[in-house]
Image (cartoon, rainbow, N blue to C red; front, side, top):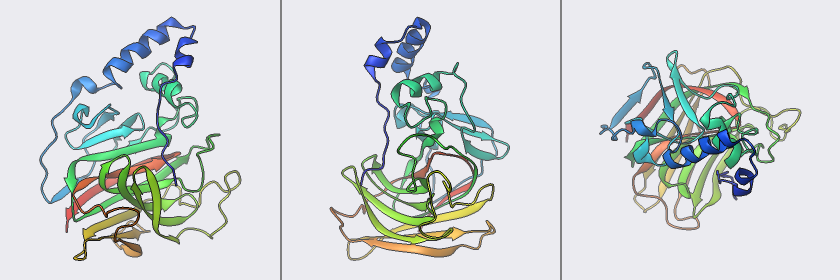
Length: 292
């Protein structure tokens, strides 16, 4: 099952532009990437317990590669910007102004999924720059708004998800909660997603409706989520998803799955961790990775 939405430049759209100032701005952007590449930073060495509380304000700009990231700890692969302010990390909130370079790039490369470039946070993908093997990946999140895009890719499978053993954009695990109220654990191998396990955890199964009930996830409420990933002696990988509904440290296991070689070898080697969200504005706090 395909779920990823990529950015590709539509040359016919560029050629058809009548505003040459925008053409020149786009040309510059394509050479340097999104804003902030000039501040590229070497990846930091982290230990077996990595904790980030978002107390230092700043902006992480999307970049063309991990080596171009302006953070020593994170790489923003998609979503335009990751904002850190007021003691929390957050996707872009609301809409981007049309005067920004990020808006222009998304307007030309993936207008369909980003409301004409105004909401690149619809495709938010944040990765660590450190690799993790057996580890617990934990974060607190709060949805501040739903982006009810007309894109056909806005659907019940969108959600808030944690990456694990991320090798590249086509080979990874993720687990989390979806707009249809289900919890999910998936494997993506060779660009195709396979479901390892799922269960309903918010609302009633079948109540999701794109137009009338576009999300069964809690709004404006902090929720804790944790993904544990570790190798098994038989050569497989176990993934376990836990939720802390009150965000008070009381995590409850809600779903687990073993990958013993579904449609290809299990990802037993270390990989990047991170966060994915779709078609919503989200805040984050207390991101923690701990070796197991």
